Image (cartoon, rainbow, N blue to C red; front, top):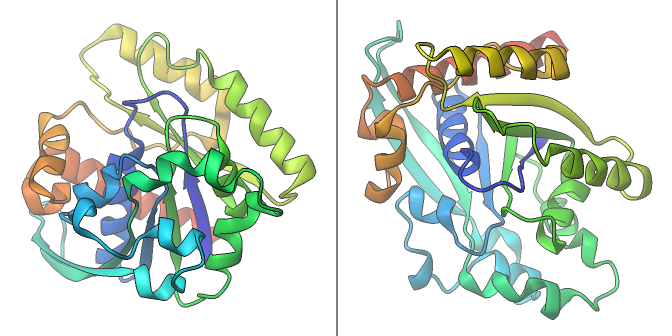
Length: 267
């Protein structure tokens, strides 16, 4: 079971969008995927069509020890016809561990508990039947993100292909190194996802080269192009494949999912 944290303390870079659509893409490629919503805003939960405010069993209740993790996981069927795929019609089920607003007090509520950094890891250790687990992190470096870094094998960082993309990334890299040294020796950054790319803009192309120079092979070849459908899909509770299967967003995230799979199969 490969566990990947999708993280960037800067908001609006495509963390949730990437988690949902990579997860669904890998599901279409016959992998069993669990999406963990670790953000109190529950954006991933809502983006998959699950009404977080109506749930009685969420990750918060798992952290409180009120229910086993398996009781909070929700099956999410998905189906789409992708015109750019040789198979065309795809279907499957991915799984969601939903968040709730109650997680917003995690630092205070769980901050004094012994082993607070391992709450997520201890609970996930009881399930082993997934190929991929993607953790959608909040846009901060607090206790919840620390739990993700302690749990994950790998880190993906979405970066907008814009001027300030690398600004502030040093703090994240510093945090990753501290966690790697003290809590999770095997943690490594394996994927940088370029988002909101517009090949017509010289600045975007220049920023991509800067990111590629900085991160090398960690930078995925597939770029996620600027696409309004990616911003619209969450409000309908749909993946990009369900909402607009003929869009750039659907094509790019499906190609990225295939690239991730190809990388992992070579390891």
